[in-house]
Amino acid sequence: MEGIQIQELNSKSSTGTTAATYNRKHASLSRISSPSPLGRISQETWTCYACSAAKEVMKTHDVVFAQRPTVFAASIIAYDNKDIAFAPNGPYWRQLRKMCAMELLSAKRVQSFRSIREEEVSAMIQSIYSSAGSPVNITKFINALTYRVISRAAFGKVWNGEEEFLSAVEQIMLEVGKGVSLADVFPSIKLLRAMSGMKGRVEKLFKQVDFVFQSILTEHKVSRKELGAEREKEGEDLIHVLLDLQKQEDLEFPLTDENIKAVIMDIFVAGTDTSATTIEWTISELMRNPRVLQKAQEEVRRVFGEKGNVDEAGLHHLSYVKMVLSEALRMHPPAPLVLPRESKEHCVVQGYDIPAKSKVMVNAWAIGRDPKSWTEPDEFYPERFINSSVDFKGANYEFIPFGAGRRICPGLLFGVAAVELPIAQLLYHFDWIIPGGVKPENLDMTEDFGAAVRRKNDLILIPNPYINSAFHG
Image (cartoon, rainbow, N blue to C red; front, top):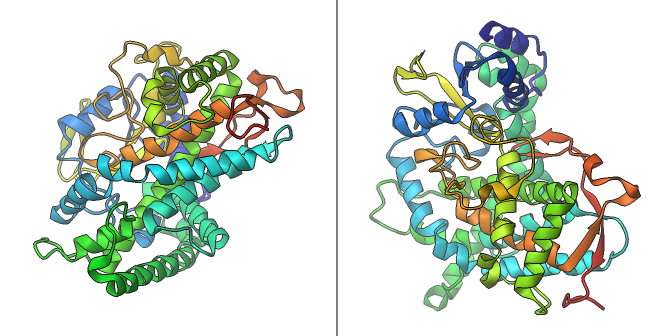
């Protein structure tokens, strides 16, 4: 099987072929032709296809695999790996991780952005109401929503040049998705990268986004100087939080402006695309499964009754909707490949000798659909989580859409908060119809790859208002 893998990869001629694309294809093949939970896709690169291998990499040998390899596109947009996602394992990265856990992305901080989420979701619902009864592009609404929520949380406002900035961020996310490209899997194929023009594209996009980040950072510094002690700290945006941390004198690694921009870049690139993708796939699966849609909708409308709206305070009562979200994350992890790791020394995984400096990727998509872990894994069946202790927080290696171990996604709480409310609101306020008389089972579910696995074609649906909605009539 290994020879087939390497031969197939070498036959590709474009750096547009991502490791994610290849690993989706190979995961399907491996079910049939290879019982191994670990596959070698080049001399330097291995992939985990089963929870047993993922557990060894992310738990048993977590210290050995805590390093990140150099990923071409990410090294540019992450300010030479000064962010938390790609920073080398070491004291600087541990300092960033602690800052995220204690300050930036803590449960308290995420809760402080509740009003932003509620305001922006309500604005989206109102906009959809204006087109009630006609086909609407749900994908565009969701993309705009996640961008505005993250922009307000990070910057305190939506940037004036919203369309240009959002376009640049989206293009960066596409390039990051290509970042684990054939030239990264096979470092010797440098010519492919040069021929693709990736370096020039990424650098141009980076300059556009960096200009916005620097402008907003400068604005924040000016406002802080003008307001002084009168500055209101309650509910501050993330740049203000980082600027407060920058002033701390006891940091082992003082924060520079580049460090701050690198962290904000992580939040935008990771948060915008993955949140939008998760909402989009959840709604898509609900439309393909009318039984599940009806059950989820009945729960939301029962819990919130005739209030006319959904608020975050009551979301914990939506036990079935939470199972729906878990099932969507199992079948459609935002990133099919968890960010790659690198071995700092020789290690044995699943009986294979993994040399030092080897890249190891964990295929969350394959693991989430492994028939050894999941009954009828290709069926969308939220009830599988009833009375189950399995969740997506990193302790259950058969279900790791956010990763696990030291390198688990630090924005997990932020991400979940960003998707639960819009899903519940869309279910509460509208009855949905697929245009053109398309049967639910025939809904287009073709995938496309960027930093996250998105729908190839936008999700178009017809909303019919719910009679008890506060926006009805």
